[in-house]
Image 1 (cartoon, helix red, strand yellow):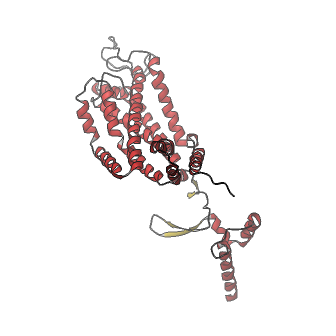
Image 2: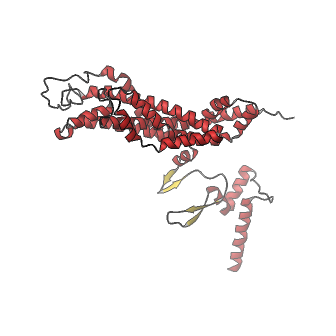
Image 3: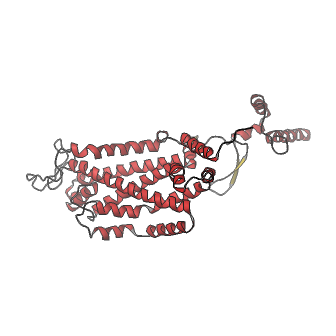
Length: 384
């Protein structure tokens, strides 16, 4: 008598197998490049204020209200008040990165709680949370941020973090809800329910672990949103301009007429830093999407040869209908289907594999095609 495994063991085995086959971030070029870029800025945020050669707020009374170009004493030049721009960037990078990280953590936590609860529990709870998410999605974020933050001048970055977190969770919650709805109907979830597992245990130990890549991509996207929004608010002067950040540097560069003075280093260098942070987060987000989405991962493995895109052969010899940009159909065969056009190659496959899969009529599809081709060839020869 064969041994029958319990549903719990089947579910646990499915999860372990999924974890073993989950692609690594080191296998994706976009994710690697993005992780390296973000890693550099994380290091700058950690040790930057320690390495700052000057106090970013200290004014040089001998500067005579004139900007100074980059030099050995001031690597990124000075602003109109003689303050060192290099020190401002080192200190401001930490503020910007910490704000984005904290906002990303809070908003992603809200996304997980609301998205998983709505998708797994369903019913009226799902409808209520979906309506709640849709309401937040249609709120105009930028005008609301400008109005609310204008009432809290000089209160630090806390109001900005709270508002960005409250406005940044709905997109991630909708994506996580959709994935949870898909997982809820899987066999290993049904097996866990049949074994009497509690709902909270199923959510924390079976649903959420299967959404790690999706949650990571949502977190990276939220951090990107938070950094971009905070830099924009600081540039407009809505944020706290007494705390150095990359947006605050751009704000003072605008107020100091850096463009008219020709002080390109005052606004260009912090702008490049913001662009690099955004590029790193975007690449990391795209890479995580490809790792978590099999369709994107398969598309990334395609190769281009002589102007044509090639991908691995299909496992079955079937005819594919391809529609080009002009709307016309083109019948293409998979590489294995070409075996039917060459009986010699077919015999080689028979000798190497020993047998081919049979269809429901008792004979193989490939053999039927070979007989058809042979009979057609003989009729053509008789006609000639």
